[in-house]
Image 1 (tube, rainbow, N blue to C red):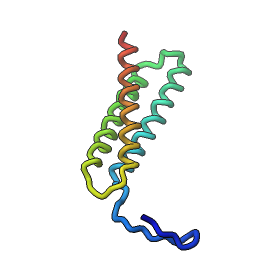
Image 2 (image 1 turned 120 degrees about the vertical axis):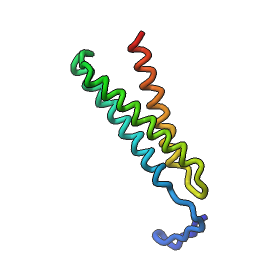
Image 3 (image 1 turned 90 degrees about the horizontal axis):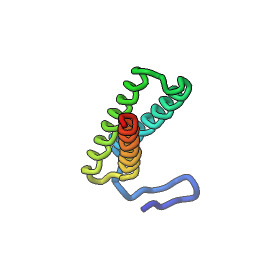
Image 4 (image 1 turned 60 degrees about the vertical axis):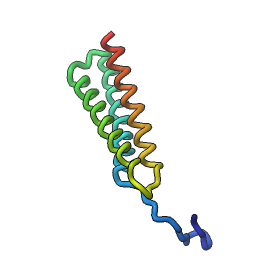
Length: 109
């Protein structure tokens, strides 16, 4: 509950905070999305013959997403936190894990 006095001052009657792990998990998810988009662009520019280097960066992107997802899930066990950032981190990283796995499965077929 917040009480506002005018436009600037407000009093907050809660002890909830945004957990640092949740914020980091959300940022890791955004970095993972940016890295995957960069890899798409690099692969397109080389017409699909980008080689082992781009594949290794794709696997690194998958590992980063897994780490971000685990960090976000660990935040849900804490008490008196806002769940916005852990939820955002879990959703973004989870979608990145699924998309990377689908890319690797489609590439193997």
